[in-house]
Length: 424
Image (tube, rainbow, N blue to C red):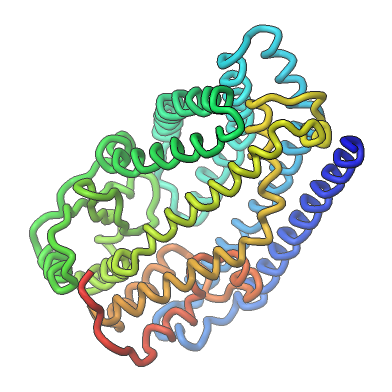
């Protein structure tokens, strides 16, 4: 019976991996061809605001990222196959089991997989930052800053991740068949703790946050918060220009740690009314509780996946189907993390559609709380400054894009609005 299950799961994994890779490549090629076919003509709705040169730059940037994505996909598949059927995990298991036992073995095994994955991804990260982003004028990061960020990220990941990993492995060994429920509770608590700690202690390790200076922008923001009944929020400017010329604004934290953050690049490029409109969009996410809903969704999925892993943990065929002679808790965690993406890839367009729905809702709210024309102008400016294509392939966009295409988003902003928003 186990032999049949081994062969069946091995074939299912190969099928899921192959189909997801083929679909990803096909969508990538569609995106490249569609963007290039519309490279030499600005869409009619944007001709008064975006030059042909800027439109062509966005097309070239999109194509360059798409091609790099195909290379990254090849590296991802090669690493996955090397770790599973190529015997990589088996070799790591044999090495660490010969030198360590128990919890130390499990932590060393998983940490080594994380390190290997990071080292494999590093050349792509370097190329993306210092060649691709630099080619289109976005990179402002120096090699010294890149290394500093890498060292800090490694240290923070170790300080947070290793204790969590030790706790997870301990619970898996100590709590019997219901271990997955205890791990889920731990996982929820850990994520909520990080959400609270990130704006206060983690983000300042990488960027400088200064209070938003008095002036028209601050006055408009404070008035906007009062109109929306959001009360007072801490307002900060982040020195995003140290690393990139891309601009953004976001909410972070929860409870007393909530704050609104503007990239300095955003404030440099948008007028005060446009900044107000962009923030109104972010307030729309807060008003509709999108972040809370997404957190609940993530926690729900994590519960499902952990319960599934609980069923696979003691199944010999699960390990044998993926190139391992035997299994244990550490190997189960690694294998599950490696093989679940091909099986869940078909869900991507559902999550993308939900995200786009949230964006439309936030835009509609912003159009009521601020001015739709200001938000439209800000979006067009951000599309131009960030070299975001105005002509994505419709199917690629439907599958992947978390934000609606530019033309749809601008048109939606100017549809008839209904009742004003209720207090948050």
